[in-house]
Length: 160
Image 1 (cartoon, helix red, strand yellow):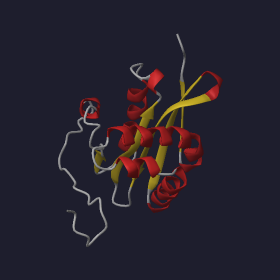
Image 2 (image 1 turned 30 degrees about the horizontal axis):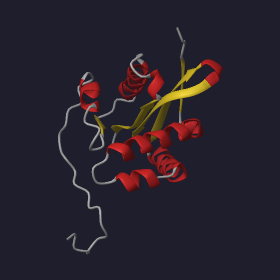
Image 3 (image 1 turned 135 degrees about the horizontal axis):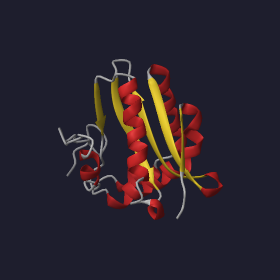
């Protein structure tokens, strides 16, 4: 039976999750009804910059799951903004390692951090097409609250 270990830290761990984050965007690209091309074209340097900005404005925590050989096989990234609002930014576990409790362990580590930091609220965004994740997040009290509609085309251009 494979063994796993976890490491936690801040933005210094961003490079450790880059390849896994790209796999997450490709997963979303494959299930997105309207934004497949946008997910496929996302690149990690831009996301890394975004998370570094969040770290500068508040706090960022990264939990990484590693298997034999110190190979990163999953991660969870969360941020707390200046108003104390926590958000799970991203979660991914390699397909061959799913259903082994790794995602659960990663989220639990982030929620313990939220508790220690006394967040005022906690949220997670789930991409359309990935609604199967709702049940996973419900075990910690996360439920759908709103649906955000995002314009796909250029601003001011009729979508006909």
